[in-house]
Image (tube, rainbow, N blue to C red; front, side, top):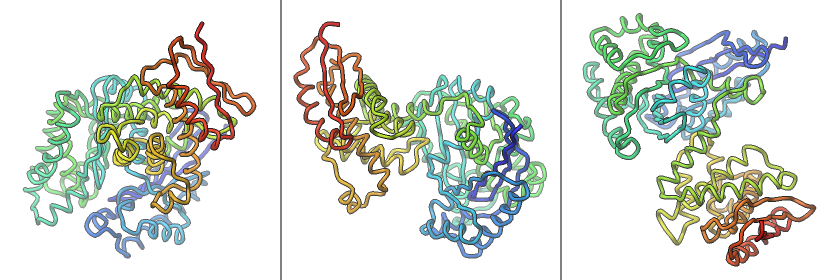
Length: 514
């Protein structure tokens, strides 16, 4: 039997963690070791925007230790990710380069949406427990050092996700600045949180009541896992959690650390995380709180196993990303019917062009998202739709997409309405797209424009469009008895750019009798 060893490294805000996983056969994943080292990088970043040299030295020493441990396990592969503490430093590129030069370990920086998506995937490792709980109205509360992510589920579907700058280290930094005593932590942290959470409730919760909360953090989870069992066990009800909060108030820091099996310096963060969890649960009217005890490292391993086809997940994560885009469109009063029509036509063209575009499954997802969000900018301006749509997409977090991927989608949406900007000029405008990403934008824009022309009247006249690539022609056959003069006119206009990008001439054929 083939055995594969993988190391997942999380360069977190408060500590460094490495987990070693063993994969034996398909769908068999086991954690065989977990090493943690306390290193508070976040306080420096959130206070000054940079990591101090002495902490960078300690970070490199620890990663060298991790490298030795990886070698002792004969790891086949590793992934090391940095989160907000590195992401928000002013000199993040220099820090990452220093780490690689001095340790040989390449740390990749996760965007917030990528980080939360991996945390979300780690929960999915719980299988049946996860599937059962998200069938009800559920919120995933992902508490990090710099921010928290609130993701709402209803009927196994992701309804919305939003990031709030209420991370435990960030709040602790505020409290330190105020010289707050321990007896003030709960009230001050609660005040800081309530202001933002009240706005969140107005915008996203409204009258929705949440039954369950899934808590993902490095603070409360150790207590929950110890109390409720390593595999998640039954969820605690809100009264039990409030009882836990009361017990914290009456104990010293050393007593809390001993009972929760954590370092004493972590206790203030536990108190802040507990305050956030309690306030969010009360805000949402939640009845149950479930802490599965997973970490970012579990999500990193899950991602690796999926990529290497060592694990086949049952949950459809792509559906969640699309669901997130649909809800963004809804927020900006986009037409779902029009979006679905455009998405179906665009995907049909994309699938027929595999030999011509050379893109993959991930780029197909970008196209679907762009089709759904194609006119979100109309909410702000009916004149500058392209630019306003671009700004909305860039300012909106779509869980599971990196910053670069979001920029690809934003530009496709932009150029669906605006004149296409070529590479050199785009770079002079400060674009972060590299050449490969730019070419992806060009190809997806050409497809979306052509699809858009086939429903230019917004009346969904063309039913059952079929696309077929024949030599240097893309034959699009539409079944409709209606007058499509308008669509034919815009189709011809869009054909020039399509032919420029693919060297394929699109041809529209109408079948009136079918």
